[in-house]
Image (tube, rainbow, N blue to C red; front, side):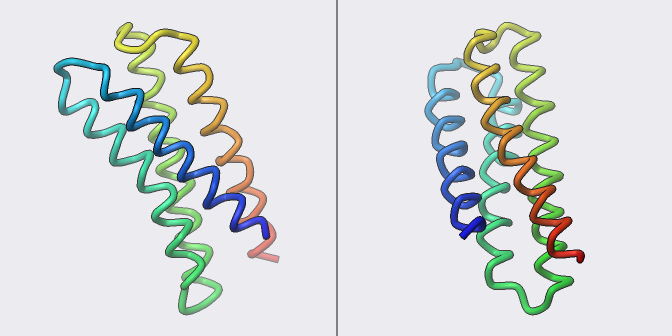
Length: 112
């Protein structure tokens, strides 16, 4: 059940990122980095559900967690460079933080 929540949250997060970045002109390499890391979160969570083993499952969730941290970095950079308004990045970082906490809990549970 928790995995479905993670998938839903990660897809919603990716959609918000994609829609938000459509408004930015230029800075294609930065936009690409944030799009890639944010969409990779959900892709790895989804892939974890079809893992071959417990170790593979944990590995995919850990990759998703790393992508979450990377997305937070890019969001912070977009905020500090004023490419996105603070209120937008705060909401996106909150969404990303929720996913991050659920991933950490899921990884810890899977390791037990």
